[in-house]
Amino acid sequence: MDLSTIVGIGCLLLLVLLSLLMGTPTPVPATALIGPPSLLLLLVGTATSVTLSFGVALLKRVPPAIRRATRTDKEEPDKLVEAILQLSGPTLSQGLTALTQSAPPESGRFFREAAALIALDLTPEQVRSIHQEQTALRCATDEAPAAVVEAAGWFTVRVSFVIIVVGLITVLSRLESPSMLGYYLSFNFLTLLYGLAFAYLLAHPLARKIRYTAQRHAARTRAYMEAILAVYSGEPAALTRQRVATYLEAAR
Image (tube, rainbow, N blue to C red; front, side, top):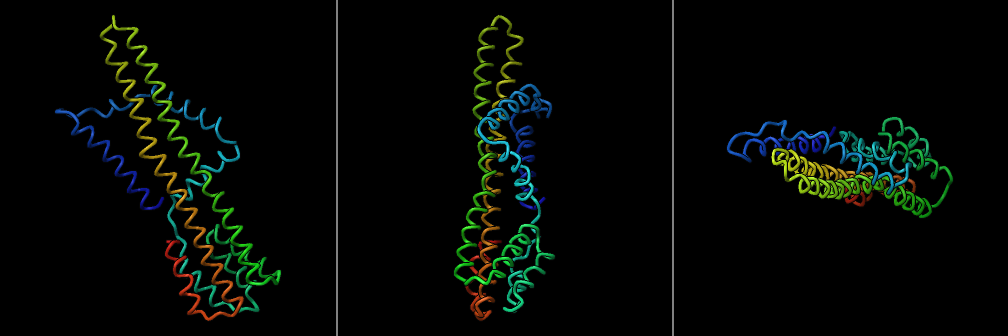
């Protein structure tokens, strides 16, 4: 798990702890925030809404997308660009194939595809055009799971409001039993708390991170392709470094 995710989760837990300690004159026990019925109803309602809204194929891509977005990024795009610039034109395709062994899986796949394009003896403009189309499609594909996570957050909030309305109806129908009002009101507020916390503190930040990860990978592949085409066309390495600097900055 990467550092920003760890820090985010830590801040979230600290926020919950401070709310327990500072919200009332006496500390509230942590068990007051545990409501299995509320959590179960939210999970079932949200899962149902998400399943009805998206296809199974897209839902299966959500866990891998979350893992990619939250794991530690060990790729070093600057070093990979330098490794590309050290290759020579006649052996470029073989050199890219060799880079697939040391590159991370996503970039390794890109180097295999680039080596295949170079082997076709296309012009640099043709290679760039094909790559730009592939990158745009792949970026859109990698960003798609973010829509599922974001929708799950919105659905959780809406489901929580539905549960609250039902709970208020229950409260109003049992006013003759004041001893139970505390339980029903606690159930309603816990449901709202779970829904808002999941949506705004987890689902929406995670969706943004999935999109950012996809865009960062797209920027890296653009930088790699520009370096490859520079070697392919015989462009000076110093000029190439200046051109790919913007892509590398976006790729960090």
